[in-house]
Figure: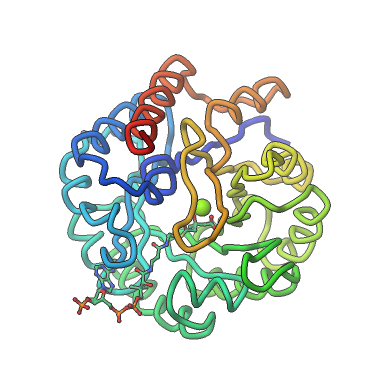
Length: 287
Ligand code: HMG
Ligand code: MG
């Protein structure tokens, strides 16, 4: 078993999307540029979603145009439909991500569509990405608990993971969107999902609302997962998931992994600077 674990940085997208006050485009670019120096292989920069739904991400094209791209770093963007994909491709996103829900309630709240309809909407995105040679990642939200529908059945998560796999996602990230998962529920969910996709094509995306994200990472490590999403400064939350707090903080996750002997390859001095900068963005917003 490899001792290498990759952290996929989410701060500029999942971290900032929930901030109420508009963060300056220049500050978003500065955050990405700082993160580019930290050793990440993948950074989620922004999302090409409807600005009516998530106004904070309305400057996606300008952010993508302004960042200084570093060789070897993949600059990712969320794309909910073909319109979003075309804009992301035009803006030279290195990779894109489609995002589905394991529950009907969250699917309606986040995407204004049933799970089945959302998957149909992703199909042209998948076709275009394949034709353009753009790697596509997938997310499944509310993998253990939904703010609208209650506990999520592991089999429901596995079904959506299989659909995303069949559409060509190279990896599927499992979102504990509202941070209510526990090591036992994460483990049960993974037990079902691993029947559809091996651990080396799965990632854990755990929000830290209840302070259990690191325990949930440990449960996932035990199942063989070696990629985890995190946001510097623990920023974030989903605007369509009431009560959702930030992703697990990158700096806390990196130290937690290092203490267990895993190699994450990140420069902690840069990470700490980025976390401090990210917190100033939030503090200004919440001031
Ligand atoms: P809709 O209102 O049903 O869509 O929303 P529509 O097709 O009827 O379009 C409505 C308007 O939006 C139209 O404009 C479209 O042109 C425009 P109008 O004609 O009224 O002027 N529009 C767009 N504009 C720019 N880019 C686009 C786009 N698409 C439509 N791509 C839609 C459906 C999917 C668009 C909407 O529900 C949406 O944007 N949802 C995204 C919500 C979101 O970003 N949530 C947060 C990210 S997911 C997350 O955080 C979870 C995750 O972190 C994992 C986890 O933690 O679980 C990934
Ligand atoms: Mg999230």
